[in-house]
Length: 124
Image (cartoon, rainbow, N blue to C red; front, side):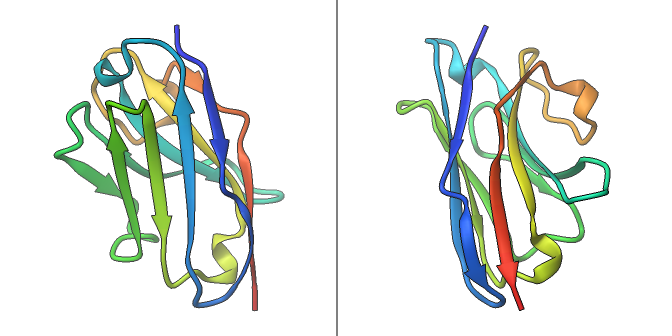
């Protein structure tokens, strides 16, 4: 089992950047594929991006492609989401998630463990 804790959310102006991170407990972090999801008020949770176990492969939702970058540090048990050129539509609670079979996916039911989320608010 793995526990996930997000940090780094906050308030930023449109066009700005923000980095959110997710720290994982346990010694098997490198065996998990990791994903980022977000949920805006009144909307369903949506896929943002994912990264494979080694960190060499990433995949992004079209809405964030070219603006967001996911990276991981298996030695430090962390995964990060660098968000650039932020828009008000990016305002949401951001969640990291871990898939124990190590295959990154775009559906939330493909992930087994979730963090508590961190709020990101982008002002216009």
